[in-house]
Length: 184
Image (cartoon, rainbow, N blue to C red; front, side):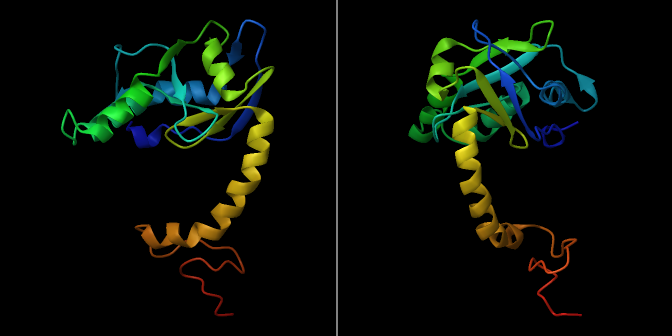
């Protein structure tokens, strides 16, 4: 499998206990495990867990498996070692990352500073983002999701325009590529 095949999908809100432990959704645990398979071979250099860091875009956490971090490193390798943009990304992501191992129940222990950064108290919302995921305060995510759905609707034509596909399987009345409302 390739990184593109390991997908974090859906949204789950789980309880954060007094010790900072939270259950990682089973689908996310499976995505991490499948992302660590390259060319049909399971690599044992990985640990059984997730990697998370404070988002550089807001008050939530971002994460994934080691496959995601390898992908980030491969992109960064295209830059010179002392490139300031590379160094900033390395510090913000790699330098602030925490490896969190799964316990027997599929839980991880969130470091207190990460829980505080994201405003996590009694619950944590895991949001699948394809090759990565986010962990949010549930109320903050509920407020944000309304805005992002509106933005996604307004900007989806840009996505269609840059897509390698010229037609999409559209529903009735959809104005995406290949269905410009011809009425036929």
